[in-house]
Length: 241
Ligand SMILES: [Zn+2]
Ligand SMILES: [Zn+2]
Image 1: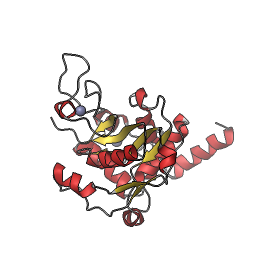
Image 2: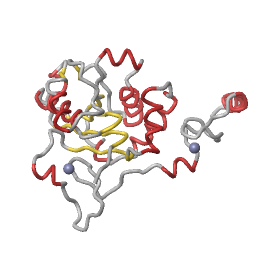
Image 3: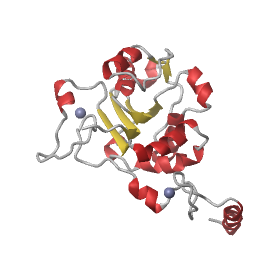
């Protein structure tokens, strides 16, 4: 860092000191959390299902699949999530989703990069789960798109914002059951340029994974367009045992 930018940052910190994104306590570095809040985040670690990434309470037999994946393989080839979505981490999600906390993008970019390295090996392109344009206008920006740009910068894997489109303004999913979510999302996604994804390994990014219905809808559309493999990475995951 140059002397000038060090001085600039010093002055900026006096006028507007960096604060923790959750508790708003003053901290030393911008775009971060205080150590207490960081310590309360639940990172998802092994053991988890080798396909869908659902964490297991315990796993005595090495790499396993969960019951759901054993019964029927999902349309994506692997899914991983960084953090468990709970009452505490929820504060961070809501700030990023609906507020103007775009300053959290660098931190979230680092979180995504800390996920299973298999997500990035041999991957040709990064795509975001798209918002329908009406919702995009309401929220001003696509949070998954912001994460993709950051991740593309870190990994060197190109991000294509216009390949995957949401063609149906789906109802908000929050209150729907697993089955209703799947119905709600049937044919909701379309691949704009199938030739670009044909034979390619795609990494699909979203902010929160709940039942997996949204990423499954996207993965189905991508596979139909000829994608060789679809990997999924989300920042959060609703974990229920
Ligand atoms: Zn804090
Ligand atoms: Zn599974």
